[in-house]
Image 1 (cartoon, helix red, strand yellow):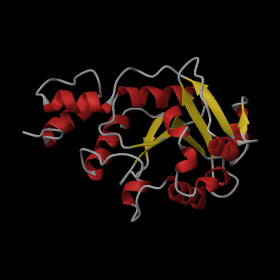
Image 2 (tube, rainbow, N blue to C red):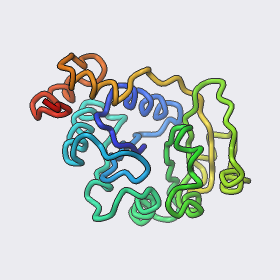
Image 3 (cartoon, rainbow, N blue to C red):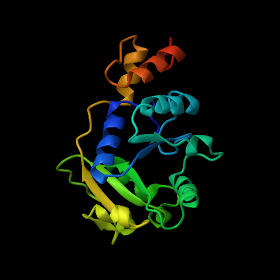
Image 4 (cartoon, helix red, strand yellow):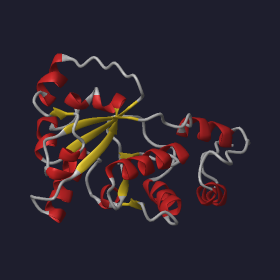
Length: 207
């Protein structure tokens, strides 16, 4: 489960934990991006964002942190991350990439998009009752790959697209950054260990 995690908060963590339980897998790994290529630059450095994720998952065995993108010499192109994971885990190990619906609807614009499903399965997190309208390019990319059988995510190494309805917590990283910049408390929106890290390192303050 990738993201900038700028900062990581309970919305990210609860989503990851619910997916871990829904799939009944040992662990969901959070992969902070080094240099995101599809959105604005993060408000804090890659090193700080990695440290915050590590703090956030330290006491939760069902969640992990993978520093692969932070340690890479490349920008954070997902296809490069999946290639690296495939090298590490072999051709027969199922890899599941977790993305939100908004990101999925732009999947056809990603770097080397046609190769993504040759490297991993994709689990799309959607709000209940979603009605997504796929453009022609996205339809062509995922045609023949979509299934309602979540077991296929764990049975096949790659090539499966599955949707899971989940109501995310109404928390945003932008909201947290704005509160901190305004001198207000972000307590209870993110783990206390992350909040303390932000305070100790004076992150997200412009004055």
